[in-house]
Amino acid sequence: MSLIVQKYGGSSVADADRIKNVARRVIRTKEQGNQVVVVASAMGETTDELIQLARQVADEPDDRELDLLLSTGEVVSCTLLTMALRSMGQKAISLTGAQAGIRTDSTYSKARITGISPKRISRELEKGQIVIVTGFQGVNDELDITTLGRGGSDTTAVALAISLAADRCEIYTDVDGVYITDPRLVPQARKLEEIGYEEMLEMASVGTRVLHPRAVELGWVYGMPIMVASSFNDSPGTLIRGGVPMEIRNKVSGIAHDFNMAKVTVIGVPDKPGIASAIFEALARANISVDTIVQNASINRITDLTFTVAKSDLNKAMEVIKPVAESIGARNCTSDATLGKVSIVGAGMQTAPGYAARMFKTLAENEINIELIATSEIRITCIIDGEKIPQAVQALHRAFEGYI
Ligand code: ADP
Ligand code: ASP
Ligand code: MG
Image 1 (cartoon, rainbow, N blue to C red):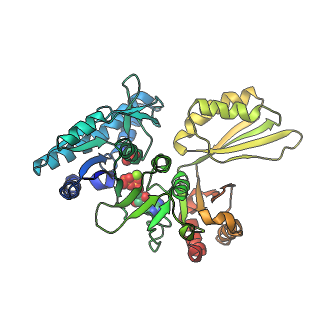
Image 2: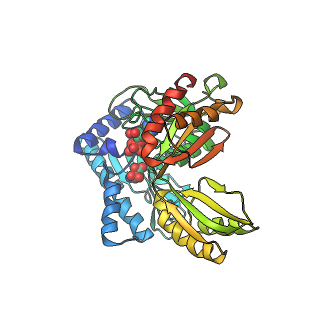
Image 3: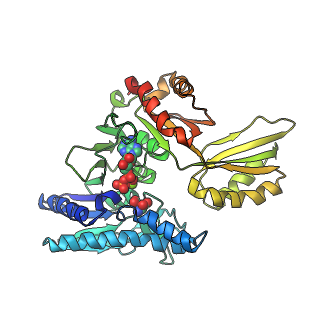
């Protein structure tokens, strides 16, 4: 008998009919002779709606209260799915993150899992139950509820699969796999049969939201294969795994985009040791991840420092940075939330020159200005006007089609 962890995303459980559809799929897996643990996200746009509601009562909702509020979305979908399964004659039980033994640190809104004690899940499985666990949430040492960051149910599923030593982790969503690029922007994009963890992690980290980056990271570290497929049809999905042979490590395996970013510039910074550390330590203390960092060449020992953060972190970043900027004698601090980023990713790019030039030329031909450039060994990222992202992704897909 195999143990399978299946995760269903928000669009897969968006209404009562879709919840019943998921229930039927879960039953099919169980009737094939498997034990099944299901992780579900909140219904449809519930999480966005709850955030909006919170903002109607407070400009900056309290982190702890917001996490508790958001965690209710997953409680609704999971209890409804369990009721549907039970009314279809199955033995099923829903568990919250805390009941499922998911412990996290206390970084509200982007908590990290510190450990899972899956005893309760195992006990329920032994009784023949289908176990439904609320995605995206855990509990800290104070037993306060935390959430894992937007899209974090994927991470719940992979983490549970690892801690239960499951045979497979399946992520069901509204597309039937991982495509070269977002099929909503480029309908003719090709689906990948499989992709290595490293490339998938790069893609997820720069905006390919079909998988949460920490889910891929965990899968990679613990060698848990992850299948991404559709909950609406049975077409074969994309397998994310290690050891993808060199021959199929594509030069360009993906084109990713991300609207959720903002640029912060600290202007007129004295160019001397300790300045960057003062700024970035303050951001790190506030749990704000910084992405691309660029420091201009200094003129008369004065320079500008630019970096990007998630749009959702911008207000907090400015709050943190302003006093630091003042204390180090910087002239000013500005921000721009109208930007986005496009990236090309491919393990094979390391050994093939000319990819950056081709990317920049494509953007230039489309009259798209590049604000910042960042690279890793297997990725090139350009920060551009957010409104031009769809055009950029389509043009890059055309330019790199033959290299994919
Ligand atoms: P879920 O609610 O199931 O977690 P998400 O909205 O988080 O679903 O992720 C699925 C979406 O990811 C798709 O609808 C698609 O628009 C988007 N997406 C972005 N890039 C890709 C890609 N390269 N391949 C597949 N889907 C992608
Ligand atoms: N419901 C949460 C969100 O919308 C978590 C998830 O869907 O994975 O981000
Ligand atoms: Mg998702």
